[in-house]
Amino acid sequence: MNTKRHANQPIVPQVAAETWRALVETTEEFNRLAPWEWMHDSHVIGLRHPVTKEVLLGSILGRLRQVFGLLVYRNDAGRRWLLNAILNDGAPGGLEDEDSAFEQDLVKLEFTPKRELGKEDRAILDTANFSPAVKRGRVWPQFRSLAPGGFPWYLTQTEAETLLFALPRVAAVARMMQAEPHAWDDHCDGQIGFVPDGFDPGAGALRAEQMEWQPMLPPPEPRPEAVSLDDASLAELLQLPPAKGFHLELDVAYANFPVANAERAFFPKLAMAVDRASGFVGGFRLGEFQDRDGAKVLGVVLRDALTQLGRRPESIRVQRPRVEAMVAKVAGELGIQVMRDVALDELNCARESMTQRFNRMA
Image (tube, rainbow, N blue to C red; front, side, top):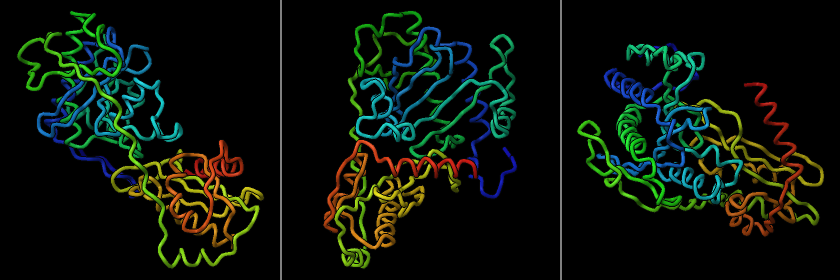
């Protein structure tokens, strides 16, 4: 697949033509089956990859007649996101609501109108000699990969093979549910129906008694990286005079706009520090893709803000438990109290203004 790309555009992964042909053919079979007619997205289907042994969780979309397709969640981040959605009414389970949407980890098949396809999508379908069926409304398959903090991007060879493995097995479960619609009735939320290892969808139908039911809980949210300062920076900040009544509002969270990266575009962490009394922005900076928690960029902003303001605050005010955990150690080293506030009015106002400016420039 050869398509022109801009100099700052991430590289589109290369996938073997035979993989695309097999995947698109399997996708067409899935569309003809239309499992969303009787399956709900809460019917989570468990799979174990035969090579990596990774647990994959499949969820069929389309019962609400808005989005049609299949999501295959992977890794702890993906499983955590899906299981929280099922068990906790979508609550992020430790990660703040504003950031949870950026933490999905999955490969996705979605059926869309042709107008929603990009040139890379059309090139993939040309490779597979795809032609949409008129009787199914001329919908087109679109494939995407989502990773925590990453902009939705095109599949790698490994991701395409994962979807090719998952699709016929999810379809086998859907056919079983069509024949035995009460197969899920005796299993509560959090019990995942696994397709048995070694099941061959081409060798025969799946029966309800073959399903293996396992309770699953969301993996715990990992503790975020702590902010640290080098010895020289710490010594310089300790020389600053403490200031009674000076409170610094501090935060780091995903920005709502993507930036370019060699692998894929990503949503960076935006760190900000604002003087509560005056609303003066003492520092702001976007993090790098590798700075997953934003600890590095938060440390830079904290150091720059205190240096620019020329004093140490009485307290650092934070809104998120994660940020509190990230700055607790360095704040203690600087003799500054960390306090949590329901709202950081000055900082949130400044951030909204700043992100609007970034979006206009994009």
